[in-house]
Image (cartoon, rainbow, N blue to C red; front, side):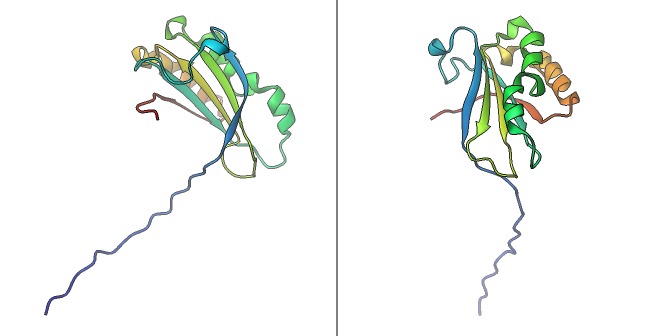
Amino acid sequence: MCKFLRPKLTIASISFFTAAYEEVATIARPPVDVVPRKPTSSKTGYILSAFRVFPGEDREKLDRSWLLWTGARQIYRRLPPHLGLRRITFHKKICPVDHGITYVLLCECPSLMDYVPEACVLVDQLRARCCGYTALYRVVDAF
């Protein structure tokens, strides 16, 4: 007699959220209408910051003062020029609920991958503010 052995399956609980975001504001060099949405080279990198909001927080006030509390003003002023800041975009969740990421800040830099250590210094400064989740990333594949 032959028995088929099945391995024990272990299911891990992983939390993730899927949401739709709208672009609320943009600061761009050159003007927005000529800047492509997909990266133009493999050297293009992004500084991504994601923010949660406490229940009952005044979201209208946050929408108006996003340059300050997201660190966008700090990025605009302190990012080394040779990283080539092209665009800073501020995104807001379309259907906000009490859990998950409510706001996303995306900064596009065409030369970031050539100067990753310098970009990491700025990211560490943003993390020291203890406001949101901040990281560097690059697009590997787009469809």
